[in-house]
Length: 242
Ligand code: CA
Image 1 (cartoon, rainbow, N blue to C red):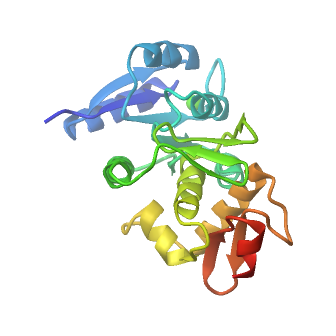
Image 2 (image 1 turned 120 degrees about the horizontal axis):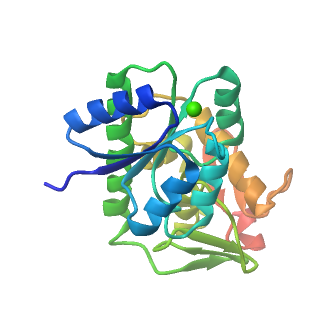
Image 3 (image 1 turned 30 degrees about the vertical axis):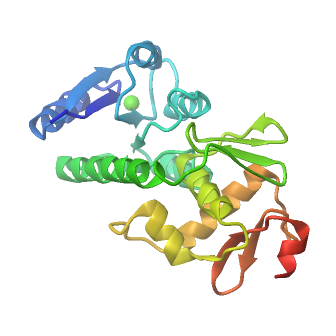
């Protein structure tokens, strides 16, 4: 079986060794990097299956690296797990939802790290398998265009820097305009059954997605809130009356 390739960007040598040792014994291939620039030159040669990304780095920081990855169509769907050392960093990740797929706080147990990595990889491959056979090449509604194959979203021709989850939410909603998706349905589809969290997570991501779309309430143009139920994509102004 093909071993998954994990890239690790972490400037602390002992943490790099700890991660490498444990991931290699769990059957992963691992490449470690100390600087953002060395990571990006490696990505030019080969994309990895998942990136473990530290925040405090000598030449850059993890947020900048993540933003750069999400804006590059070659890497934008690469699963990323952030490593945070401080409470403020965690707050920032949660607050901005920078497009990381998960986060791990230091100090972490290697068992937790390994199981989070496996969960993110499983989700990524489930999404791929589930998405491939049914998706059209392009969906366009009300000036919003999504290209499922490359996971790109454009509004009025301008590319929007959505996180993976924001993209998935939009894709699901736009694949069936007018259909109401409950929070539980969206959680299952995007976060998967193993996700232990609250349906509020969906609301938070919808809020970020609306911000990207410039969809400001109280009268939403694109994504409608169905009180007590969930969300739907409004495919035309008339459809909002349904
Ligand atoms: Ca560091």
